[in-house]
Image 1 (cartoon, rainbow, N blue to C red):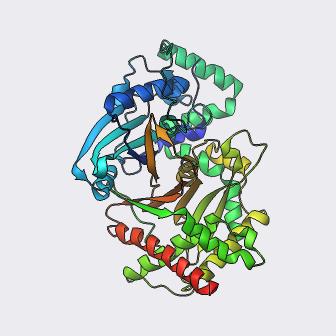
Image 2 (spheres, one colour):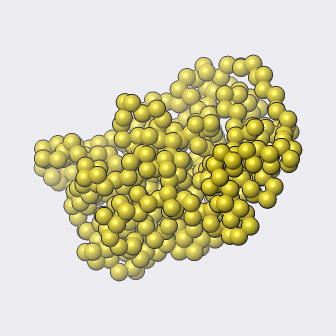
Image 3 (cartoon, helix red, strand yellow):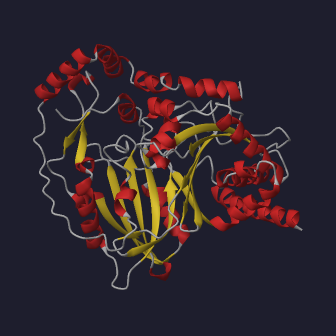
Length: 474
């Protein structure tokens, strides 16, 4: 029988709405090789790479009556050219035009009748560059059977584009009778699940999502220990519509290292991470953004962030098992950039060392936390939890510090596109790659028309931290 979606993956499908499509994305900008890079080359590259990831040629099939979770079946009419699409910006295309393109295509739901992914080749950027924009559904990217499509496309070896003999042939799609028979067999093996699935199918679709919240007990109790109160009121929590705004910000990794190095003489120097500097940068940006909005900002003002953190574990079998989740009240009311950094570093250290962070096993129970695509992990966790627990999800993925390629086209930068959960007007993803730190800010178009102000505030906040670093060094 075909592979069956687990309860959480199924809930992403059941709870998806027009205003909250549940797919993750990325924007990768490339410098073309001397002989160019075109649509046919991208199609060939993806066709070759997905030979190693069969899930990208499978679609979701519902069980009649929803007596069991859906299953993955081979798409007998799979057409890679449907999923790989070609677009262009008016030359010379700039980053603002690319951002608007991403904001328009990312909220569009993926076709449920086909494999749940799309890739866009965007031509016409300035200086001869091109971009590849990806979309992968969270139900698809479980990290065991499928990684994010962006990881399928790029490689560290420009010579790794070689042809692969593709022997894939789609299996016959099971009939409704066969699907029902398989569901009954599974019900005998796991009788408690059939009650939940019938409820999800006939009584209240929202009950499916309750399973994810039930599995979040460890996370909720952790928040109770660290804060014992709901997330603070924030304009970051607002009704979400179907339209988006998207901003890309590129910064220099060396700047974060300089800020961190200032603490080399302190007692807790080794406990201050690049991630702490990133969070301090975002805290300062939130402070400026709130002030420009005329919001009341006082010494106790904070923004609660849910931050998935990667933890090194030599024995981990999957990247997801090296994750822990922290809930951090970002001190946006603190005017001093250095003090913000100290407070965040202390809060993170307290959670990590005090057993208050949520470990990998709890995350796996909550949201299938095993994907190697860590941005997808953060998105899955954020989608599964109540917005009352935090104001914003911030995923910071340490990426490779060497050049990656799509075929022999060199990747210059990469920006995540994190989905919005219900009531979450902003999501922040960032990736360090080849000496840079690249932010992707995805926001509701109506709730955050000033997202560009927040983007510029990130650049300014990092500058504040650098200035503080220089003044302390004198």
